Image (cartoon, rainbow over all chains, first blue to last red; front, side, top):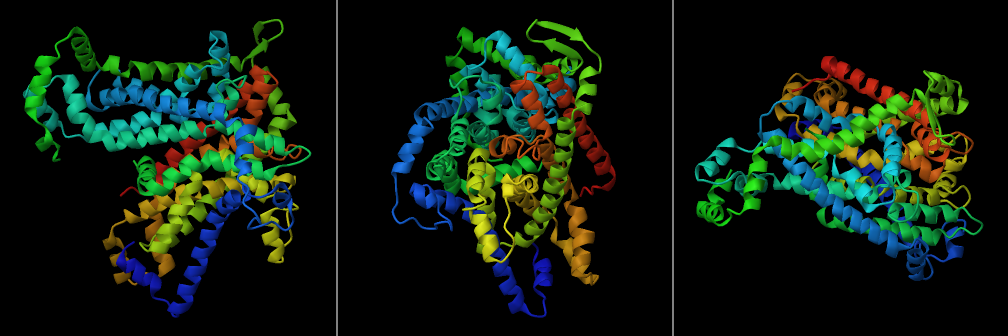
Length: 287
Length: 315
């Protein structure tokens, strides 16, 4: 914010009242966004009785770590967590392997059909997934690809937005640097991996992070392109735990423990790297 | 760029001399050919979106009998069916109501909060950072928290309401309030992202514009509506398009929290498509409904672009 604008904002008749109002609004927003997370984490330590008590309990009498073990067993974290880790990690690599060369070609090379092919690349940004999941379901079931790691990875390998942003980064690389390297006898491979790639690295790292996030948090494809539990991932397991809560004896504390474990990796990553993660999203939002 | 200084050109020569194996040559040649580089992405894009879409549109005119295994052309039968299906019409209405609330109220809140938080002070930055957290957390975790907090008898939300002396609500379990509860959660989850984008948009407005306004003795509301909003319009436009498409294709939160209920009060288009297609195996109907969804989102984008050409102020 500019100084001038700030001054005009603060130029109030009663600065003290304005300051207090500002603090109140800040506190309100803080509570609005912290409370659900606080309540979720604290509830995962409660006993079953405490979790259902009215009025709600804000601080459990005793911290029960056993809830996490129950959630681990109930949601079969060993299996689904393994699926989540394997698929999300593979997606990061396949997505980059598919996107970076493609973005390089669109950003730095001239060829026939460049425009229509680029339109095809961007098509997934225009078409809602609801239009394609059924055809893919039918196709994959004909090919026998349902419930395979390959199909779950394949779907997240290509992403139009990822290619678009990496292409923009490639376009910003200075041409003279590449020419200099070529004049010194570097092959195309060397030019790409030793000169161009280091320059676009920040964007690529960002996109890798987002590919991981997309796959880790995904629920829709989990649900629509699988028919059994073989390759389903954690969000599905947590939802199953949730659905069990609708039964006769809800065990909210176990559900909360499961959800806490699901979001823990992202939360910890965000606490340590919130600047980078926020910048990544600003970058993807503003072209 | 300082990278040029870091490059040791002798390394290149060594690399060149060392690696003249066949694989290296083939790879090197391939890298000069753009079609080889783009092939994997284009093939997957064609398969998973373009052909899938064509198949979807074609199938929406067919009747696929799964028991007899026959496919026959039925013209607009599927479209006629869904437009006389009360469930489809209800879900269309719900989707539009949800979109209007989640997008327009959401966008207004994002702008107001964004303008409020746009100060480089520790408190403001902290709140902004915390606000962004829900956006990177899995929706299933968010849904779990809110299912618990929105419980009518023992939930935190009703406790807060009754403490403040306000009437309590059934939240996602009440037919009247379920859709709005989902809209609330959607706005809550997307708030941090919107604010982040609005703040970075505000920071890109140059100082001299505000100085000129001050010199012209422009009042604060006047400055906001005549300067901030127009200069922010590309950002707002981006948020509007992305969030309205996201609202029209809302699926996760419905499937996680309400399953379209209570009754059909939160049945939305995306959920209708899913239920018809995967659960009831009415492929033709599901695809006809998804084509309607596509037409809406596509026309939304086109309308937005047309409007953007006229109204959006690019610097």
